Length: 262
Image (cartoon, rainbow, N blue to C red; front, side, top):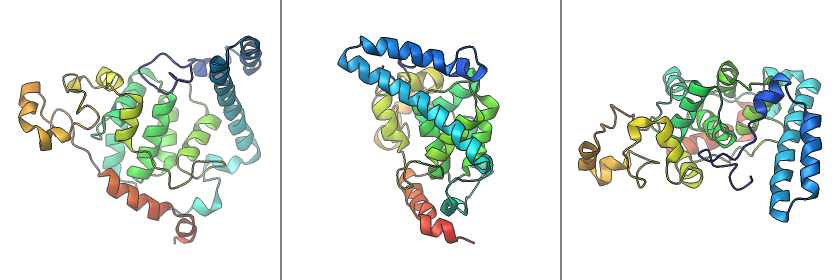
């Protein structure tokens, strides 16, 4: 499961999150069954099961955080990250929500959410990082939207996940870790199978360009007409330059600057 669990086109997750959310299965039962399987598992299988158990532990950890520090519902756990000057552009937020950012892995993930009420965990991290550190939009906007759409939406886990991605929560990723949506797509959806499933307008785009269709304009503009796609019309061009936004985010999120922003 560990090898497949990060690949959204693979059937590599437990799909138990909604059952946990609504109580149709208990954490205790899941862990009891996992321990039974773990006893007879081979070394590679053990690693997968242990990874699965760690995800259950993370879920309960966020419940404890919300219980002991209820303020996280409305503000960052880390005090030094509470005064970040978000740009909060409404047009960017609308593009993100509707899967129209020009970054295929982000757009496919958001359309999966809108169409099914669920999103693969790797994709949740990618789209959260993109909203917060590429579009420079307050993580609370994304957290709220997820709660409106997710079938497995749970306030504690959702809040914890968003604050982890935004580098504002307890034991979160460092502020300088910023996912590159193109390289993430190349790594976890190498053939573009997931992208093409939820972005049918890109179904004919060759694997070489599927993770960054904008490259068609530079390297093979005539191929657009051959494929029957008009970039900027049928599918949007990237709304931001990732490299430039990354540099802005590094300055914006640097703890000492975030802490003393007026």
